[in-house]
Figure 1 (cartoon, helix red, strand yellow):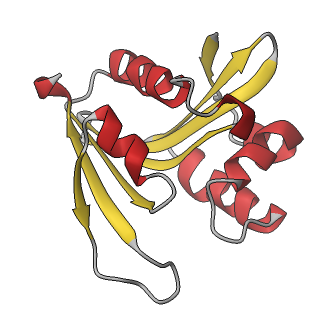
Figure 2: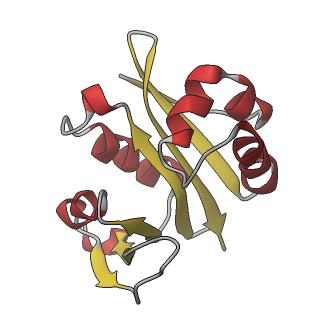
Length: 146
């Protein structure tokens, strides 16, 4: 397993393999939305984007904003469906925690992914129901408590 940082935000939407996988973590993804996300989040200094490959096959991605050098806000986290439940996302998060030297991680998620965050050790709080997005959850992880 190899985890690497993507430094050129253009690769996020120009590389079909990456754009298809990030699309699985978005509501109604389109090429334009993926391009907009790459330019508005990952082109900025605080934006970070990593990919995980096994034998040259892209199996996972994580994208986040780094706030005040000690907090990450996860914007996108996805693993190929055939590789889910194999601890890929956990290994990606472990790598990011070590690489970025942070204290706190935050994420907002839905019913499909909340069990992952609970299983990793995030403190999960149910948010008010959103008619457009459905049930959402605020997830917070303290690296100090590892």
